[in-house]
Length: 633
Image (cartoon, rainbow, N blue to C red; front, top):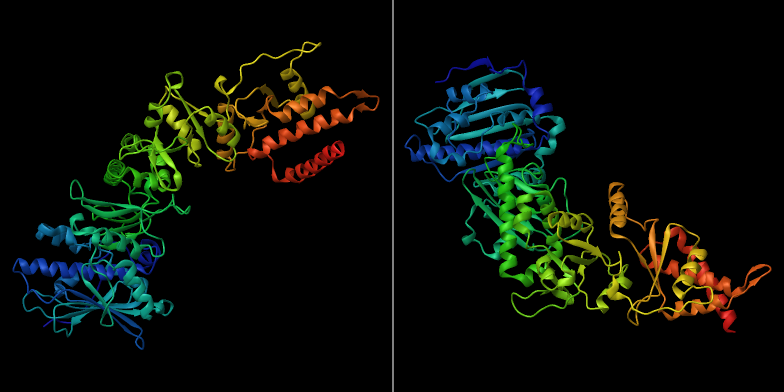
């Protein structure tokens, strides 16, 4: 019979409880996770010890949680291996001593089943309780039940108790400010959050709350597509279905299971914290794993479960080391392998979901050289070329009449004269005029219309030094111009020179370079803005550093198409003007106004008119139409 005794907990500081409450755990609610985890640990220990013949087998393991509103207590019970009085003294009183370490030494064959790696886990109960009682009975031999009690000071009591079956009850006498934990809805939420996939039933007032089954711990052969989709819907309700998933499973050189999902693009991707849930032996630990997976994979969703990821003592933060980096590399490789498999086996499906995959792949390639090598042939671009027929055709047909190609596919269709120049467009509406010119001459143009492409294209040029990427509105080559001679007037000026002088005088802006060319095609615009490639890239980079949208650079080119009938009429109008004593004639004034109008229309097409300039543009447009009406009437 146990003799009642009093004593002091053997700790390495005068009072550990304030440290636990203020420093070790970041949130009080994790006490339930720790106590339920200890119960699951005890059940696992009993099962393994019974297999070794060291204790009775017992019924199926169960964690039971009971609430007593009147007494303001919360009880967490298990039917695990329990403890003797000596084990209570050793494992509970000597807080710096972890029972899991001793147990692992004895029962090494199933070490991954042990959850309780943290000696401080039990003491998290003092974050919410003013007094904690422990009633336990060992499953070994004819052990007697014992009761341990502590009020949060280093003083404890240990005495004989009544408990008919092996296992442990942890009874929390809640503090007044922590009475939210006697609300069943609050406890149910915590069970769902932290204990949902624990392999043991967790009951609240007799009702099983947790799901128990963790699909990621199964073999992919055991799961159907619907199983994967249902897990995603459960973890991320009202988010639609995933695009594809990657099943992770390895036991060397570390133990790791998981399922990662590519979500549909929502524009709300979290590139800083992430949305992947981290588990340790099916116990939820954190929803922030930025230390584990590379940053470019953070917006993926799903689960990573590993007992080998080093956590701090409270499990609330990860400790970065070589193993963590190795796990991150493993995850990235598996993601890359899955993408290659989809691209190879289902190219049409891959093209259809490309816009959602693109941010992960492009950012990943720029940030991770190994990942870049994996996905080098997987990067797609929209293309103006028509989709080809056949399973392995290029360009690949996608939904809504879109076609996609790889950089290699595009280069294979280039003529030998321009096999190093890659034409691209970033805004089909803003660059419509220049895009139409190139397309009218049979040129294929890649569509690089995401914000990431402003960085990705220079990165591609760095990776492929032999290539030159040229945006459609950066310059126009000879293939887009009519080859014809011009007649000079008595002053020795041809129409191009006259137009250049006219626009230069009308705009009175030295930062705008005027070019005059005869463009091919009946639908060629009267005027358009050209932005030299390097100048525009510098402007875009400056905007990125200043976290603003790139506007029209002050220095740019106005290309005037002398073949357009409006411009031809402008030449005639200007030629018919005379100088009067009061200044320029009405014809010259109208010619100047039309020149400015053509320039502003070209700016408007590329988004170069600021909001505060639009009102003035509208007023000038109305005045110009009035002038034209007067001349017509």
